[in-house]
Amino acid sequence: MASTETKTAQGAELAGVEAGLDALEATESDRTPFRQTFVHKILPPITAVVVVLVLWQALITFKVVDDPTKLPSPADVGGEFKDAWLQGTLLGFIWTSVSRGLLGFLFALAIGTPLGLLVARVKFVRAAIGPILSGLQSLPSVAWVPPAVIWLGLDNSMMYAVILLGAVPSIANGLVSGIDQVPPLFLRAGRTMGATGVRGAWHIVLPAALPGYLAGLKQGWAFSWRSLMAAEIIASSPDLGIGLGALLENGRNASSMSMVFQAIILILFVGIAIDLLIFSPLERWVLRSRGLFVKS
Image (cartoon, rainbow, N blue to C red; front, side, top):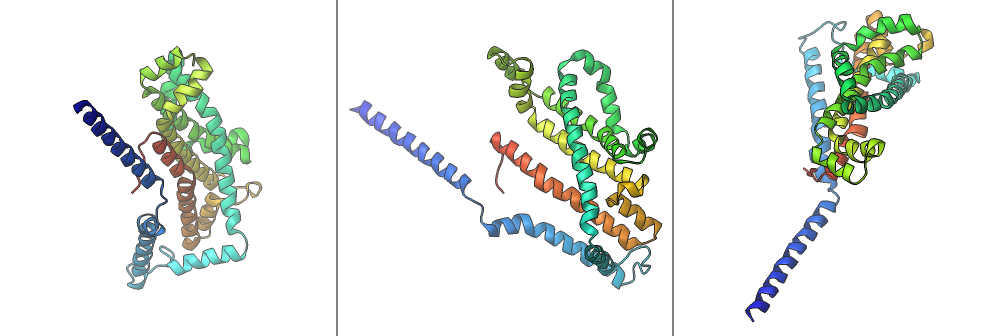
């Protein structure tokens, strides 16, 4: 009799646990209400932009800075955007730089990933070129522009070379760091199941090293974007078109601070947009796949 009551109590307890887990899963799968998304995700950056614009205009209104050649008003910069839009050149400025940056980053990804695997898995290669990669990562990307111009001339190949030299070390070092943090137990388990060589790298090493690899990708994109801007500012040619870096340099040559601010805002906008559209969803996917993603 007592045994029956014990089994019944255990069954009720298990049923309660299962019900709680089901409720938790149901809660997590529910879509976040738009009001909550607006308050926590959309409103804060809008508020920050409004505050910056108000402070910016206050500097002009109260004549803290009364020289428009040093600090243009928000209206002047807005007029620059309006003129570029009406002339049909605004999207062209953005596309010229974004297309170069993304294509160069894909090339860097294709080179940096196998290079990182090679450095992480082969001790001799790591000892030989590991310090070189770290040194290249700390080298300012603008330093590569003059030799790239001399080697390749003023064309897109020069731009891509500068992007590669800026991004590949970051991607490779990020992957090396991620692989170094993979628990040895995962590697032994993979070898036990026959996942060795390329199969082991694809099915065991890369998934386990994904957080560090993703951090390297983010840093690689940042370096590639900076490298491209440096190349566009320094190396200008009609054959290269006008990207955001060239727009910034044109504003400086014309002593037009409104154009300079226009270029700076566009460069910031592209960087933020790439992070929000590509890297933030990837980070959430990685965290969710490891059970670490918590909705705020």
